Image (tube, rainbow, N blue to C red; front, top):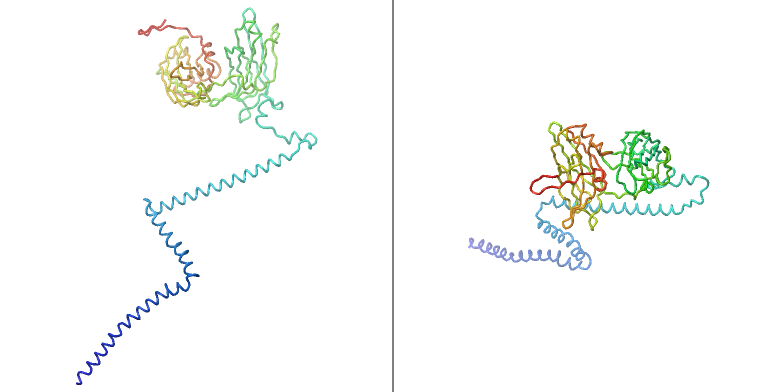
Length: 442
């Protein structure tokens, strides 16, 4: 009996304990539910209209849904995160620079408008005395062309006509007070002359380096009849020589020969005037180098480039190529040509040609450089020509002399193209007939 009592007690305890299990479950459930309900039900319901709904709809979606979308989007890009961040930073930087540029441009435009308004308010009529000339600054174009206060210098020349020989002799004596065209305050002057309207022959004097007072003392002769003389105009232009760019016109003289008294020799000073802008059509310029090796009897011509070529096609362009021809004893001797450059007025060639020319022949040969426009259907048209050699004049003769005085060294220089008819007339080539299949000419 004594032993059963504890058992009953323990059973009761066990039962009570077991019976308390639902209580625990209920407590847990109650706590859990109450907690959940307190945090999700009661609290949410209690504050649905005020705090949590606002927080749930705004903050939760903004801080959980958007980052999740961005992460999923970034994971789809097959690039490492650092590369993506770098690209984004670069795009932002470009956008920032564009915004700054737009702001600066708008500010500058506003300043220009304000400046225009201020300029329009200035009334020069209200200014007194000679101060208006100091306040009004002419443009560069106005200074360059036709300004009376911008002297270009003077030229001393002589004229003599021999009627029995139909020969006009033009003397270029000297120049004085020429306009400085170089940065150092000097010029490299030379004189070019020709007769209009025929312009069949052009002469040039020697170049005098770094001087504004050159003394030329050179004479040139034109074969012209007395009838043509009365209808002709003598043009003498003073240029500033530039080896690697276009030569600049300092000034010119135009003499109407019908008004000249030919009963005596004329010698006088005259002021240079502005050169005519529209007298001669610009055919373009070409740059090439010459190299002669006497020991190997090799003449190398490298056609480098051309610029500002004349428009030959209807579309306002050309298909230029260059012919390189050697003339020996007034007969066509050897020739080569470059490739054709399509639809351009500023072609770049950089093509080299080598000819075998002995030292004896180099004294008698003429090098003819001609630029042509290629046409598939019709005949090719000549854009312009020049020739170099011991019989040339001006820049062409100087380039040829530089080549001969500097053997084995390439000498490059720009040249202005001349009309093909003028060069052909000067060369006065002998016409030859080539016999087919024999290679012989007579």
